[in-house]
Each structure stands twice: as C-alpha cells, then as structure tokens.
Amino acid sequence: MNEFVLEINGLSKSYGKKSALENIDLKIERGRIIGLLGPNGSGKTTLIKLINGLLTPNSGAITVDGSPIGEKSRLAVSYLPDKTYLPDWMKVKDVMKMFEDFYENFDIKKAEDMLGKLNINGEERLKALSKGTKEKVQLILVMSRSAKLYLLDEPIGGVDPAARDYILNTIITTYNPDASVVISTHLISDIEKVLDEAIFINNGQIVLHDTVDNIREKEGKSVDGYFREVFKC
Image (cartoon, rainbow, N blue to C red; front, side):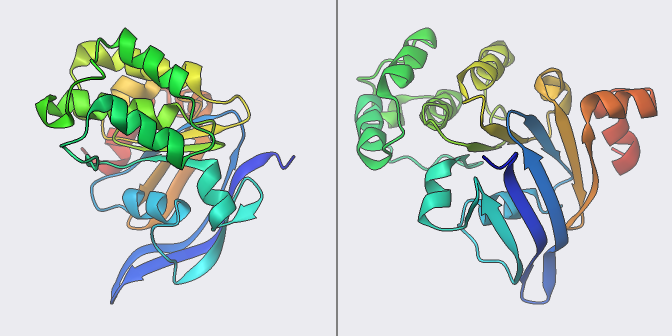
C-alpha cells in the first residue's frame, strides 16, 4: 500500500485568463487530519473539486489511493461540499437509502446511529430542517462511507457552537485509520485541536505545508495566530 493517500504533481487550473491554481505539488500521508486554510478566493474549493473529479485541470496529475482521477478514485473519495445539495422534498431516511444504493461503501447503520445521537428524526423532510441540521445530515452521509480520503469543505460553518465538538469528534472517530481527512475552513481556532497538519494556500499556490506541532514550535504561536499573521486578518 502506497504511504500517500493523495499525490498531486504540477497541478494548474485556470478559468479563462484567471489562474485559480498554479503548479501545485502536494502529498498527503494516510491517517492524517489536515486543515486546508486560506483566504476567500485562494483556491481551496477549486483544489477540492479537482481532487473529487468535478473539475478538469489544465495541467498536472492527481492520484488518490494509487489511482488517477476516475471511477476508482471517486469511490475512494467522500466529499462534503460547502453548500447544501440534497433535494428538499426527500425524507432523511430516504436520503440514507439513496446513499446506500449509490455507494457500495456506505454504512447505513453507522449513519442511523449518528442521526440518533444528534436527535435527528429520519421521518422529517429536509425542507423542514434548519440549515444547520441539514449540514449535520450531509456530514453524517459523508462520514458514513468507508472512504480513503474525506474532503470536507466548511463542515462546521453553519452549525451552532454546541454541535461543533460533536461533529469534530465524529470526524476523528469515524474515518478509516488508513484514510485521511482534509478540512477546508475559516474557523481555524475551532478545528485546530483535531489537526495533525496544516496547509496554507494563497493566490492558487501552497505557501506552507507542515505539522501543527512544527508550526507551533517554530513560530511560537497557534496555527490560527500564525495564519492571521501571514494573511494579515
């Protein structure tokens, strides 16, 4: 088994004349939780969509769990987008069944257990749920797949602070130890405690990729504090 769950070489993506990512190289080991951190418009979502096969790069190569982007890599990736995407008319339990039918690596018993712990009624239609509860349902769907790479775009942005610890604990305890989790967020202080590594991205380029411990030791401050210093925010 390759030690890297994700390998990216010379990856570039542009929209017309606007460059979104420029010549990115990146390797992510298995069993890691990584924060993908950067200002708005820095290229985070574009990078995640490229890894998930939703966009086509202008140049470069991406390998997930040893496979180039394609059918095998898509099964290995479990992706949480930054916007709700589920049909409002469906009941929560029907969405669960849809995922079970669509993904062979979806564990519906795990999903139902997480629903119960968050007191979400499977009989409810999505349109009756709050924005935060819908986002919890989406996270449950994503984390109930036995994937090799979890890509979470703003997983706690719309939930109340009381639910964040449970969600972060869910992320830590439910993913395959041979897998890795990439979390894109602007709420760095909320997720820093669960991170093994941090990637800083700006203007389509990776400006830092290091362990959280190394950043704290070298810079003498938290990842959140160093991020604010680097990006002046």
